[in-house]
Length: 398
Image (cartoon, rainbow, N blue to C red):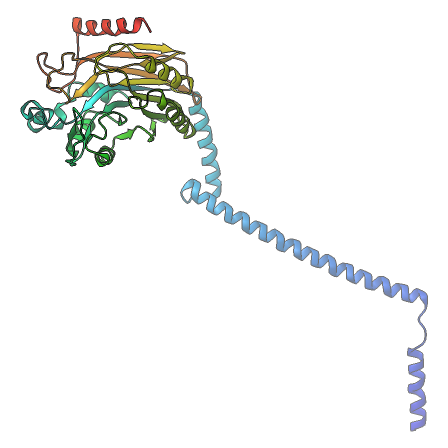
């Protein structure tokens, strides 16, 4: 084939390639292209869905892993889930079972002496001779059998020497906190007129000392919420002597504060009234009623150094004065009668029930009748009935 013929054949071939395509052919090709695009799009969407599922599965696995570690100490998520259900069922069952706690309250505890007292007859001398267990040994079994024991700590535990200019000022060394711990006392009110006898530092020293011994302290602007056998008990201490009814606002605010912390039982301890008076003042009555109206479940009083009556107000008890207890403030008080007031509270389904189970244990501040040996002791027989009769007498007009 010569060049002319070859060129003619290629020209014919190109002409045939450029020949117009029919409309049907174009539509067929377009449908094919659309099908290919849909297949590609579907494949991409499937791949994206698979990746998303894998990501979600990974996140869920991580969450279950960490949640399982936190809830079940490293057990797998299935076990953690089972344990959580069991715990929830146990908690639900526990909520239906009532829980009761018994609280004991005693009066003024002055663990030390005034530097102007006769040292040979002071509480300090008895401590040096007998050690810390001596003082509460006659009431220890009572305090050990209850769930919470509260006293009024009237004095300071400090090494400060700058005595305040006042008639009586009390202090003891830090080791005297062992008197309370060895006697089964768990909580102490510090809102009273002897908490700063050796200045502000003596007050903070006392807080640090008894807290270090494992005793919960409260009073003034310091409240406490204790867990007692699973029940939260709020403790408020109010000092009335300086401000009279002016202390009411702080007292109410403190009640609300412990309630916000989950307190199911609220106890308000007042330092109030007149010394050696067996009947409460108008301020005592008004403050006690206000405390209960604002959420208190029990009101405890001290400062008069003698017993006062017990009032039941809106179903709640007001013990206007518990008297002295382990009292280093007097080597031979003329009135040695005192008491341990006990109340049993019952919480059911998270709420305090309306029961009012109380017990009064008549005591003397001393196991000796002729002087104070600083060893509070339960009374028996006629002596116990005599003290109960006094309490009933002081309570009758309330």
